[in-house]
Amino acid sequence: MDENDRSITGFTMLAHGIFHTYELSIPIFIVIWLDVFDVSPFVLGIVVSIGYGLIGVGAIPSGLLSDTYGSRRLIVASVVGMGGGFFLLALAPNVYVLMVAIVIWGVAASVYHPAGLSLISRGAKNRGTVFAYHGVGGNIGTAFGPLLTASLLLFFDWRLVVVALTVPAVAVVAFGSLIEFNENAATAADGGTDDADDGGSSMDLQSIVDDSRLLLTTGFLLTFAAIMIYGIYYRGLLTFLPDMIGGLPQFGTYEIFGQEAEPAQYIYTGILMIGILGQYVGGRVTDHVRTEYAFFSTLFALGVLAFVFIPSVGWGLAPFLLVCAALGFFLYATAPIYQVVIAEYAAADVHGLSYGYAYLGMFGFGAAGAALAGSLLTYASETVLLGTLGVLALVGAGIVITLITLYGEGR
Image (cartoon, rainbow, N blue to C red; front, side):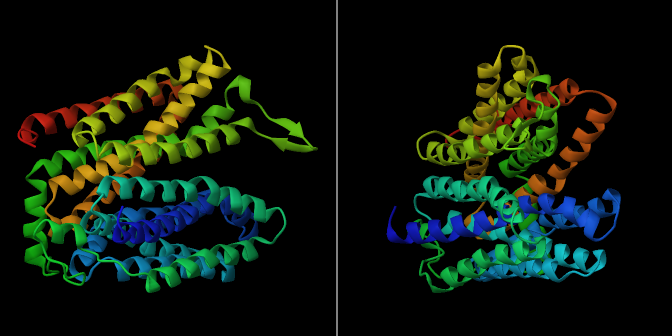
């Protein structure tokens, strides 16, 4: 990577890690908030769901802003908003202020992915490699953010821990404000504009409609459908995965140093950590292999792994852990691959809008995976849930084959 690529990589890795640290630390605080604010899980669940839902709902407007005003300032604003929303959590005297704080966080969080991914797609020459490192940064936040939060809560009041989690956001804002890079270096090399402040898209309604129509009548529409299915698989699997593993007879609780420990939590954390490797490899693969084939391969692998997850328990501990490791690897390897596919099927001046649609599918429609998982676990079984997710992944793989057949010739 050249100096510009390295600067973009460092900036986006840090911001991506902050996003996922906050996203996956919130569930840890929920247990505390139930007692502190004396509310039911139903009420608190609605409050938290609003914040998560806004990530998907706000993705398209965020993408349009990125196309119009550039990515750097939006990423900095996103990190400021996420840190500010978290800081307000520490001051919340009741559940109403808590809801306002989470809404602020969700709105700010919705800005990051469209802005960050469009920055990489327009600014990085070694796009696949930068996407890989970007994914690694996110997975570090995913795996170690909740671990850090849980560790701090052993020694400090939850409000102090929330304040402590805002410190990295301040550091990222300072870094992003000082570092130098060209937002449009890659597109300029391909003959496009080299003006980092020139977002090639207009915010007027007609332009939005025209750009959306252009996106959704090309191969991007099939890509969007595959991403939406992947989002349902992702959320449906991870939401209840610790509970599913903990419910297996081989993984009950045990005592260590007088404290109860749950192997399921360590296995779950291990899956997330394996995802770091998956993100890196997935991004690097796109520099050497046709991206549609890589996308098909990861979705197909996820389908197979869903089908064998429960049966592998009976094969012994080592085979089961191997399946878990493969699941973590392919689950996260898919993300940088589809991010590159989006960049290839959308014009450079609407990359922000394209990633907005993508994360509407990933986080917005994908949120239905949690409801799907909850209903199937309540009224059916783990086997039915995993079988359903496996079928969905194979359907997604079939959509990618259609994409290759209809639009891949000559690419």
